[in-house]
Image (cartoon, rainbow, N blue to C red; front, side):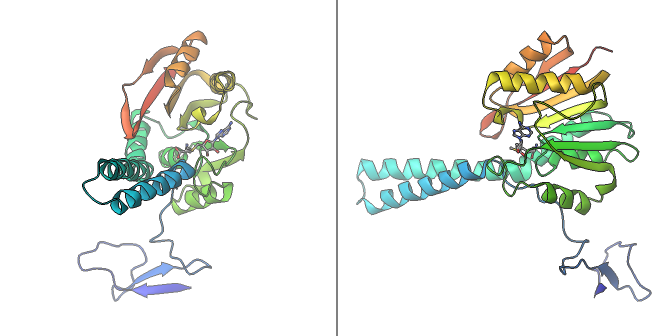
Length: 269
Ligand SMILES: C[S@@+](CC[C@H](N)C(=O)[O-])C[C@H]1O[C@@H](n2cnc3c(N)ncnc32)[C@H](O)[C@@H]1O
């Protein structure tokens, strides 16, 4: 089944154009078009964002109910506004700034296109899919527990749909599992990455275990890239302890208000 539309003037659409210049777009079962739909990577920490919006709205309402120029009212407006702005920054971090940093990181890996790559805590596939696009003859594998508290509508099927929408379903694989105890052979990946995921493990021992697993599954000479908030210095310390080479901790990036840092390292070859 096809939808027929005339492309905008000057549009260079080679695919699906008929003799009269009309565009034929294949339609999925649910009537959405594959041509216009893009992967949706959701919002990180959705409950935190929702609570910030609620608290911000309550403080703003209180501020506007107190007759001006009461200092209490001004204080409430200031606090409410701060909460709303922070929630807005967190949403734009998830929707725009994360994607920008992802593209920069994927580019910096200088992939040959044949590698086997692992994304620990892949969620809805931001990094996984970015990598898969650069692996025409390789494989991108994601492992996750699909915790909805960490990412909105987090689900293995959502990630699969995102991979399909990005046209990388053939080179992408998703596995349900805990990054502290991964079902992968030792020395089986050329690159291991993880973005905003390891900090969700509540204890240092668990985070250390995840780092240890990342190093175990890396091939000799393989590259590791971890993007995270809170515990990045701890990861760098653990990696040095595990004799990883060139352990580098980047400066802070405030795309989520809280500083994000990138840790890179290489396994002894
Ligand atoms: C904030 S989301 C980030 C997802 C994705 N990496 C991104 O950048 O969009 C954190 C992810 O880590 C996953 N996660 C948390 N603890 C995990 C664990 N122990 N093992 C595997 N995945 C975990 C969550 O389910 C969630 O998908």
